[in-house]
Image 1 (cartoon, protein in one colour):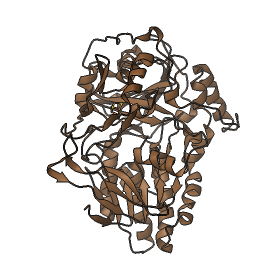
Image 2 (cartoon, helix red, strand yellow):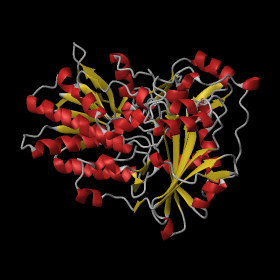
Image 3 (tube, protein in one colour):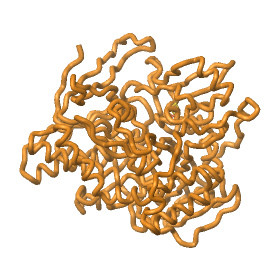
Image 4 (spheres, protein in one colour):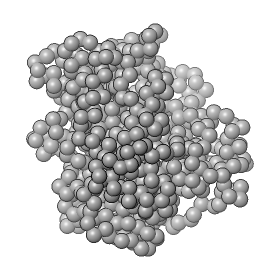
Length: 541
Ligand code: SF4
């Protein structure tokens, strides 16, 4: 029988939002001279930060009330933004520099660096305050009592063979009971999505919209003058009706972070975000940043883009949702780290009040929503609430709506502009067959997909049940005929391949990016948790 463990606050996922919750809660109560709760953080990756992916230019607003000036000074950040530019990429050769950086994009003086390292730093601060962090354990299930209140969570078993039988190193899952569970799983979190559905916590729009962000770290010949230089782009290689844009951050004299984010409401099944990322890096405006370099790290992750109208209810009986799992990303600025921190602080203030009153009821947890809505991050989301939707119609319309939203502080349009769920947007394949993939020569700054997967460090024990399940093979065949099995193209890790009319799954390549959860036109792929500790091993993302 599985062991029963107890804590007071259980945080699922050791990302910035969860860690901010734990840190702020413990510090708040310590400052009040109160007895401290037991705070437990459970993380599925092997080490802290291994599943964290973000090119981070961090809006320092998030540090307010969370870190001391000394702690901010000691952050593992090598540079601050010294020079910024913004380019519209028209086609594979032509770019136009926007003469001024739009006010909402300005980031002069902001820290720029690896979110993986910043997460590790936050984890150390949390442990110093008394939080307990367990890595390599995937939380696979929320536990409810008879009245439907969340009362804890269960970790998945480890050491199970591909047929589901226990192996010599078998470790059963454990139930952990808590007064409140904080869900900080990141974008498209499996437990968060299930909770939203089972408790009806739907956003005003009903669905979230995502982009797939693909990122590399590239080592370049040393150039001190470029440390802190950042460039944002939009346009090519996205077409005129798909939201796409990238960034290039010189995080030090020898290291560049480069990312291209492609909206997953694209319509053509043959689109391949990894190839688009490679085309982006070949654009002369981008290529000059990485000339003479070598790619050394790779990763991919979905980014919630729906914004204000796609944020679900963030409180359930016994649970709070923080950070990217709640879709707290400012789509226009492509910034969410500071809002994640603010949501963590808002959750912590609520939990501190609950702890002091010894009341963790639904009513006592509800003020988290109000506190979240009082943050500057929330106001930013509201200001650009309708900006993302017009980009799906025509790029020019999107740009106009962004300017209008900024000038009128989000007042117009005052209604909610509609967006369809990403998986509904694909058009049937023209000609009934996927065209062959675009062939690009592999170079040190443009590795092929499998070389990239190798650089992600992803590892899965292959003698375990496959964590990717095709729910219905007949539907899979229908998808192959109608859409050409687009999973072959949208997966940035070459997990899916078609042989003799059958989709094969190389689950050991998986980067846990969740694109297949979002873009499969029939929602026929079920992403389950592989055993804890498996997956990518990002160390410098
Ligand atoms: Fe991402 Fe799904 Fe491919 Fe894994 S299998 S890398 S989650 S698209």
